[in-house]
Image (cartoon, rainbow, N blue to C red; front, side):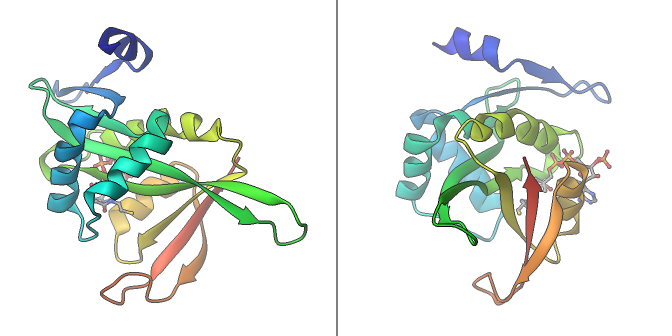
Length: 174
Ligand SMILES: CC(C)(COP(=O)(O)OP(=O)(O)OC[C@H]1O[C@@H](n2cnc3c(N)ncnc32)[C@H](O)[C@@H]1OP(=O)(O)O)[C@@H](O)C(=O)NCCC(=O)NCCS
């Protein structure tokens, strides 16, 4: 199984400083490592069962980046939202970026870009009409990253975060 995954999701070598890392699907055994990265890098914490339910339901788009020593240095997870369409009775699917983070010492090497590039086609297979995400309006690095990937600011969600900060709602249409 492991070999099959490595073939499907190859490793990427960073040309600038030879940082080698591998992207692969997350497994149950990886969840503690993912939670560690999340707790270190983001103020939004989720309970274990939340990660587990994302892994159970959307495993193909739950990816991790691991370094040479098999340590988890980044992750991305998505879910599908089913929403009634504004102008018809139809239900539409949106791919919602739940969370992405890369350990500070591994940033600006293209890891988040590659996590997005590899996971977006996977969540797209769930018949979504667009990719959506929320990001703190002060998180300029992440906003730049998403803009680089073709996301556009759609609106502001007031006091979206527990500490009262507003979020940009960003969308990339399929
Ligand atoms: C946001 C985050 C995931 C980016 O990870 P990363 O691996 O460093 O991103 P990349 O190296 O792929 O960056 C790609 C591009 O995004 C933009 N970017 C990323 N981080 C940036 C920063 N801190 N400042 C300015 N631009 C940034 C740049 O255009 C960058 O290209 P460049 O390095 O050639 O200039 C990482 O900073 C992180 O984990 N932050 C804490 C968690 C977080 O904020 N997650 C997002 C929540 S919505």
